[in-house]
Image 1 (cartoon, rainbow, N blue to C red):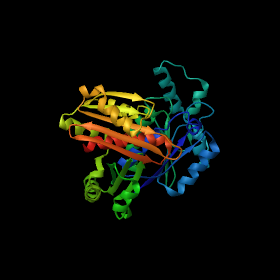
Image 2: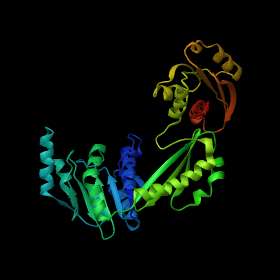
Image 3: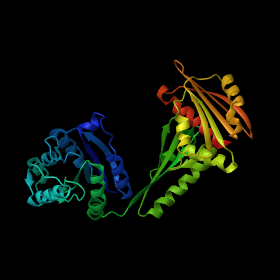
Image 4: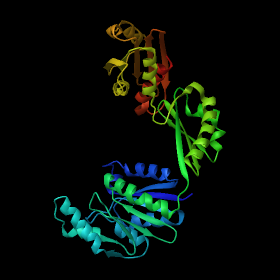
Length: 380
């Protein structure tokens, strides 16, 4: 199975001024084509550092994709960096300059002299037309690797990837394998508990099984490689059945399903309306529920945490009882070492009061408490 590496170029990414969404997009596209992604790297706008990153990747991979650094300014160094990595010069392409001038005219602009920089590519490289922007892409091939340089503007990069690069990869690499992934979501158990039950499956080589812990939620990822989508899904299904047997009701969904969706679907199935009282969670629980809507009908938020007794009393007396069938209260009390979370609800099926302790990073305490509350709702 062919392999790839992604090198994202831009000092603004290293400084945290913008978020790199290109790598996420490219990772998904490579997976869809059955290409293993071995490494993702971000490098600033420096010719020597970019060249060194490319040279480090060349012996290990079939494809290197760079994004960014193809603009007209001095700090757009990708063309020179790729040439330096391959120990060749750049060359001016008159046809690219005509394309660039035509693009500017179409956008109602006049190209300046520095736009000519975009008409230079490494010697022998294959130019790739940019139909939605002014920065041409290019492909520089070695005997063992294809270096594909794409613009950093997401809509330009995505268009070129879809229309030109994916067809090129399919032909150049004779692609015939696929990679499929399924993510199973769990709540109510810690990562170590889940690992203890399915650790044997984590030793598999195809499909592979891995865990990803979040605040109040653990995901189990199954990834299969095969010659067809049908074969890959068959491999995943067999392992998924074993995971579901082992983890039981801890599993609340898969792939795009969220805990808040599942919780509200459960209440909807019973015809119950929901109101929420939130104390010290910064609105996180209310925001998640409000983004979906029905059967969530109302809420009250306060930055002042309540004790367990105060929470139970507030729920019992709150006027939202007149509109809602279920009232859920969540209170987060910060502490020097551990956070205390109080959960309480009243419902047609009864009422409950819980006290839980959270010892993780304080910044994640509200998310952990939110997911604990949602997990209660999905089990009502």
